[in-house]
Image (tube, rainbow, N blue to C red):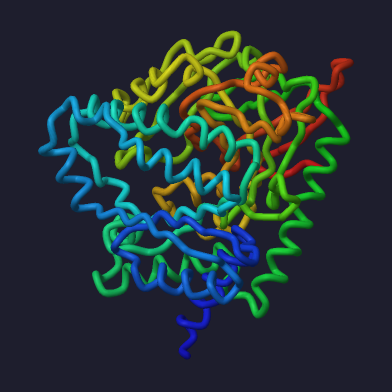
Length: 410
């Protein structure tokens, strides 16, 4: 087995044993592109070797997806097949694990009528709302990983030769997920421990507010009274650990829904629904978005915010140091899974229930009563840079540094 195949095998094993942490006789549901069949087959093999009962693969083809957006009737984008909803809900009820492997062309839907994208996103989000709520409460194990595909690789490495683009992207992915380490599983265990040190510190401080300042950014975010900082590994309702994102470099919590005021500017492009949104600014008052502007993709951004009432509010606050592995690679991935782990970021839309003390057992109404936002959508966008400072404000008004010049200040 050559060096690349060894690392690829390591990656597949990480996805199965650390990502979803598959258990004996457990079902596994994988969403993936037809562009990456060989890698998916490797993961399926690893899953069965780890004891999976049955592995289901939901294949997506980028060409077919584009053809639908170009040629299908406009009113068809408001439909979502009920059998797709039932499939996920029934598997979740059986304790299945879910793995999404992203490899999509960031420009896949460039030029498509924005209303079609909006209607499709809203229809799928509405149909899968029960499933998403269970996922955001860690009822089952789930993970998002990535695989290199030609169109995505060409976007990330446009100056490389065509034959070198996919290998270059694979190399960047494998390094980011620590599959290049001598013992990747142990490397992830150490990484998990390091992130939890930051989590424990922030939970011990229990800041009342965060104040962000940087180029074209002056934003204050109030935190719920019962907020919890989280990071790296999670635990499902059966007590099994899993890693929701691979890679991950963040620690995060939920903001108080109506406690966000000021303005913030993006520092990296946002790849959303097959389009790119770039160089945008968002203004908040009492939690709600009151104004947006973007040099690219402004109409798509506005339609995202109009998904539902909750899409006008934030659902996540995440801290990532500028001096971190993905940021230091100086690679712009045009993929949120990677770019959000190179930068402080926020998320438009729903909050994670586990970011509230006791939240996993709360109803939707109880979560809202405790200040967490509810929405059909959850979309991260990057705001961090080497020029960002963040202060933590204690309940008594004491101000303490959390970030200075883009990095941890403690």
